[in-house]
Length: 325
Length: 260
Image (cartoon, rainbow over all chains, first blue to last red; front, top):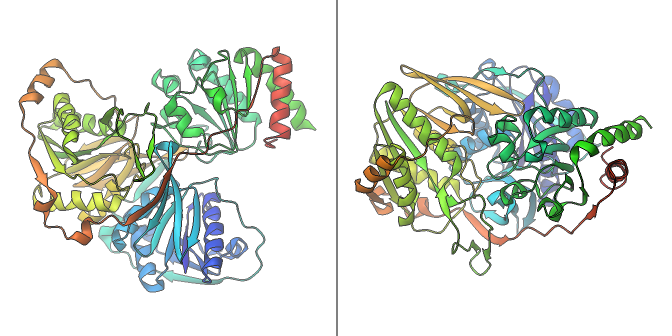
């Protein structure tokens, strides 16, 4: 069995979890075994049925009111209990904040190794072979995991969704017992900033800025652009963050976030090595920069040598025209 | 308050990574090694806790003799003691193995502590596994990717960064915390600190002293290949008046990237 963890946020299953389930189904088919989805929490039974469309043959819903909010120990407890009963040979998570927090807890509890943030999986001789970027993408490691179950987290936005799979899934809802000492790290509350934007790791388009923006107020130009573009998030270079122009959660690069969006737009951003490492796996890269020798142009699919303050307003006009059509 | 901090020696983030394909390793020659950037936030946080509440800061690193340089740096920043857990094995990328070494060191040699601090991940392996695995092995609560930490008596409260928000977690000590950028601003070493650090001996723990089995020390991730990423093909670079440039750019987004 290939078991895939489904992360729920705001009452919905995350898209990156559905991507992981789709990849799980592809590997399960190769291994001639079943794909199972697992949800952990409280009051989740309504979420089960549509998972069959993404390839789930079986759906486990592990319920306990103590798990109404996330707790790495508590969730790992539920998953470990299931893993010991169902004996999956592979367990997938999406490499989200929660997946990267929970998977190591489960792996250590089961005494097995973990491959983090993988961008490809394959089956060779009945075992997984995975590719994971290391040094923020400056190198790619192809790994095999010697322990079973093979636990892997998968980078969001990389694996295609299976859709409209026919078939039905067997849903089993189980009340799990959670010992009290397993909820000591339970989340008390989620604190959201006013007008919180989409995170760079989950966005399909990233509108990113560097020192060329000249000051914090000019990030508003990029915010405006991001507002027009669908599923987009605001990114930034290390120097823009270190100058205090924008919060560090927007930072892309080796000391920020490694991202793989469909489109990465770099404005006034020269492209230091550590930045390029974090975004070079984007499907398309466009850049606007005054300096024709900026390293960002070496990775850009389309580059404009020019002044971003002149280009962006005209781009906005063009975009509005195209999007209105 | 007894705080332990775990730090790792890594190539600095400006490094170009070259690969030794015969051994599936990076070529270390010519690289500048530093304390992993996120670990600096962990060291700084430990020093601030000591300054506010008293106690002791002990810094550990698992690695070769050369890791003494980053331990010296931590001492120069103000840590009270630094310990090398000597491991000459080339990078295994296996977080479980490192976590076992750290957990055994704590259990067998340093069982008295209130807080274990780590960087949220080591740059390079980019695993973000070891803090959590150590927490699990020692039966402790964990809060990762922390941007704010407050301690009060035998409890702590932390803000943990997630996608577009933060999670607030309140937990009993001892606990494992991993640091994210934004937690604090790490200090520079002072000259006095550097001089003091020079004189401080760094005790060395050998892996053999930990009584671990060969099986526990064996990496469980097998490196099949280590490759450079495929180079990106050079794209189209234009120099045009802003209106024309903007039109062509949007055309690219529409026709090529197909995001509109």
